[in-house]
Image 1: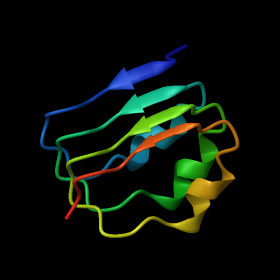
Image 2: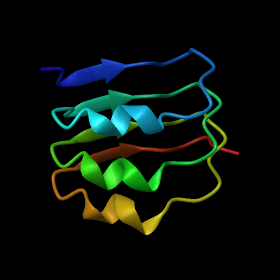
Image 3: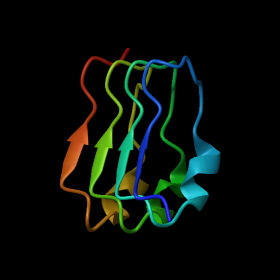
Length: 79
């Protein structure tokens, strides 16, 4: 099972399909073109680290608060 996934510097615009990978603990998505964090993110119950800096995110949905194991959220430098 995959516990860590890094898709940084790839120009992706969305990552909704990744939320089906329930075993993820770290997810690195910095330096892409992502404009929103999908509401389905709350399905990643094991997620501990989410790095999503340097994208195009303008707001964060409340669903991210459902991630009880999340202790690192890097979301700086978004536009």
